[in-house]
Image (cartoon, rainbow, N blue to C red; front, side, top):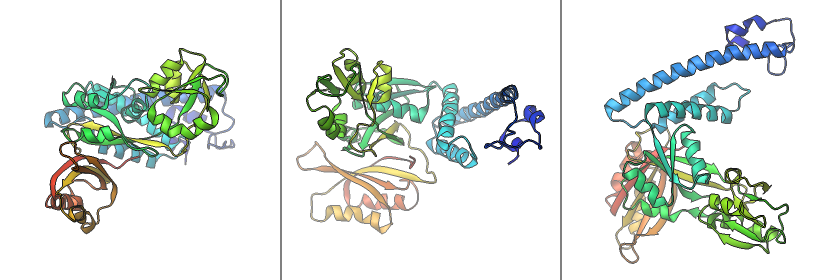
Length: 386
């Protein structure tokens, strides 16, 4: 590819010389430091101008959406943009790096369209906070909440535009309280975030054995995900359960004889040196988060739907309820049961499946599901990303 096609711009054309040997990136290897910096200055000027031009288009789109009563945040469009720029990418920037750049570009534009507030299960520096920033970027306002119920409540009462809550860990399974909240809530799942969970040992001590670290602060979910590592490395430490990983780091920062199991962001926030990394027992440990909103996104090209239903207390009821999914060849990716808490031995079933509830084969399956169930509720259809 010629240099001009890679976005160097006309200001750097004076540095082209076909007689020079290109370096590994395809640039003339004999360019001086000053020439490189002059080229970068020219490129930066173009980038700033183009970013502002892009933002002006976004603001015009926002005004149109406002008139039509549409939500500012459009997860399907967001995914399409990120997929498109990755297809256009020819390096050396990685797709991951490019997505991070565009995440902040879109976050900045969104903050100009409307002053959005994102509620999340706090406090600051938790994995839910990281998931929220991963989805919405750093330019929006974030509101930490004490409980999952508080996150639902903030969005329901319009004190926050969206909420982010954990729903499932690949090691420990579902977050039951999140599922239970959907029974009575009118909120919809509008997006999902999958975050790799990497725990670290952080503290002001200089070793990681029980003689030096006498007390280990740990959240119950983190404890469950790191139990084997703790037994091998800190068998004598007193385990003190906390309300969050951030709280673990905060408490450990007050005592040199203690440590915390937490995320790196929490350790950094509270000034704790990291003594060991990746201490989780399962290296593929990840948590799935739901983004809560008040309107379900329209159908996209690749959707996932979450729904819940209850069945009549009779023989074969569950088999008949699930038959429409098989009949219409719907891939069910998850099914989970929870007590209804309304009547003894009555259960709600939570299902994740491919497709959008208002389109195609899944719409037909959902309609037929209602013929066999006493209760059916669509929790949301959203891009099947991550």
